[in-house]
Structures are given as C-alpha cells and as structure tokens.
Image (cartoon, rainbow, N blue to C red; front, top):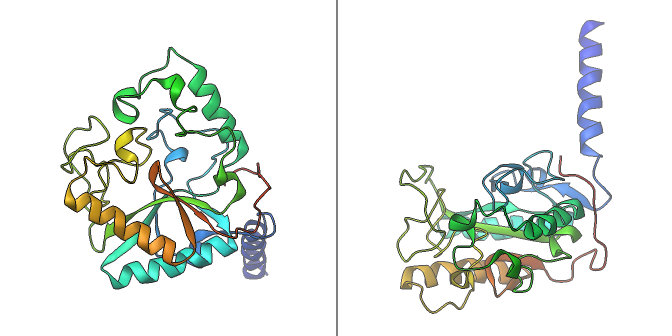
Length: 242
C-alpha cells in the first residue's frame, strides 16, 4: 500500500507540472533536453543586478512549435561541432514591466560598466535594447548562443566591460561573438564593423543555423531570434516562469 501511495504521488507531481503551462507551450527540456540552459533573469547575473519578477525558476519555456524548431537547430549545430545555449525564452509581461521600472531608476547604475558602458540608461528603450512589449512574451522568441561541444570550463579572468575583440569579456563557456548576452551596445549589432574575423564568422554561423530553420534575427542583438509564423503573433502572456 505504501508503494502504491508513493507511486500515485509521483504520478500526480509529474502530471500537475506537465500540464501547468498554457495550451501550446512546453518546457524546452521536454523537447530538446541536450540544449544547455543558463536562464539569466532567474539569477542576479543580468542587467538589473537581481532576479527579475516573473522568473520563479531558471527554466526555458517556449511554444511547442518554437521548441521543435529549436531542436532541429540543435541537431544541425551538433553536426558542426557546436550546441545551443539559451539565456532567455518566454518572458512574462510582469518582467517586461520590471525592466521599464528599472530603466526609470536613475540612481541605480551598478551594472552600467558590465552591461551598458557606452549608453545612457534612459536611452535603452528608445534605442531598442529593451521594449515596452517584448516578442519574448508571445513565447516564440529566444536569446541564445553557441558552445563548442565538450567545452565546460568557465573563464577565470575578472569581468569588465561586455565587449572586446578578444574573449576576455566572456562570463561563460560560449564562443566569441564579440559581446556577452544583453550587452546594450553598438558592438552587439549584427553588422558592427569593429568585430574580428572570428567574431564575424561565429555570428554568421549562429544566424545561418537559426534562419535555416525558420527564425527571424534582430539586427541590434546578435543573440535574439523570433520564430516566423509564430502561433501567438498578437498575444502577450503573463504566466510565471516556474
């Protein structure tokens, strides 16, 4: 009897979590468990300096259609010796509002040196680095990069600014794209002319992989892609990431 109760509780736990998401959404690990996840807004390693409201857990949630397409990208990347690493997926509107509130707090500039060293905080919305309405809230937009297969070692150098021609700006095991994720700077623009040849090649590799499988790039952020023909093009969701 005890075994049956434990088994029943396990089934209830799995079912309650598996069906907690709105219809049409999935956890990425259910579709592509080998894609690395480093969900920055559930941590303090992001431009706000603290976990963002709406992110109760560091998991990637996407529409099923986007997740299935991303699995195809992962398979193609793997054939080239790389794998995907996601930084942000579905983003609740609660988080988008929190970003706006953060941008209005002029006294809080503790992350400026690491995330927007050459920009004024009040210009981040106007210049398109942060949006009043985010495509992430529709569930088919993802921030991601590439990692060389087998590379798990993290950088040991002290972090300074978020961009460089060398790889000294990196804070993880990703390849050299010229900037870190969420570097609000002209150097994060895909066509930035100050990149090294390696950085240009790496950005081109990621963009080619993503566009081949139906994702649309964003010119001001090399890491940002939205699924073409997304299932909820006009719906902005606000359920928590958990």
